[in-house]
Image (cartoon, rainbow, N blue to C red; front, top):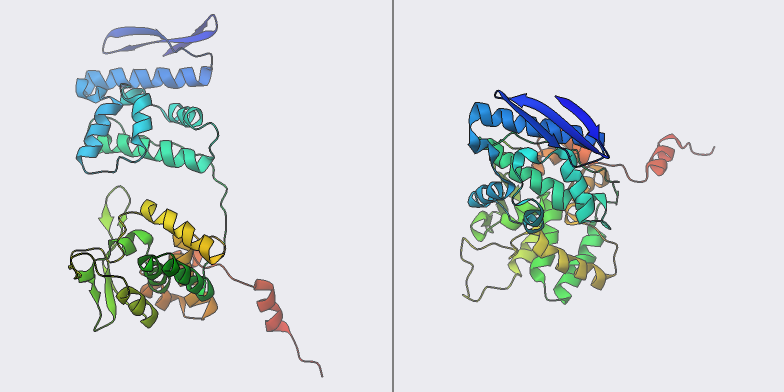
Length: 333
């Protein structure tokens, strides 16, 4: 591989399959030129060894992705930019630059969410099918915002406001997540056939993990009285009965929850808590930190994979200074 400069632009040359290739990288950035050159070389070597099917375009990869029933969220803007670009030419640096150019005023989280994550998902799905190589893209660093987990006072204020704006299903959703530790995706997937009112239990589906798609086991969780009352108060659908297949909370995705969630918070005049902070984070904070439940029982009750994961991810002490002082405080003689 040779990389050399002509005028303001970098060029490269290499040999693959007995054929000599010489081309301009079209950039004055040597690092980017080298990456473009390596991608071109890898593409030609793949075409020689594996055949022309490995020259799939991004548009074709998207078609495969959608045919598999995957979400089309954020893909329209990516198609406008990369539809006819061969996947082999799409490098990590190219995607990062595209994210910055497509969303000039946006923060790193938006760039990750709307460019890096969906583009990588499309390409890696095609890789799983044998059409190209997998791609790993370094994400933009996001400053983590730490907010306290919700407590019963927050949940009560939120659920009351949700009912006042005509969303009893949203009120029930918040109470359900807070008292079961269910992730929002799990809560939204609950159907009436999963709820057993006589035994006050609910079957919560396990989540899929990683690219392998392996799924955690379903779990049977207890439903506390407050949640039973809230769920029972959800109005009947137009059919006048709760069909077993119908979703309990009536939302199809987290995005469909967000607007109503913010509206209820505004109505209640309370600080923002995400569904995660009000739900799963709130569950483990309430059970372990505030009520002193042993971590193993809380982890099992919340469907966590391990106690260690719960302690590292969800459990953050509250009022640390006060707690330490109370331990060592001695009564005056």
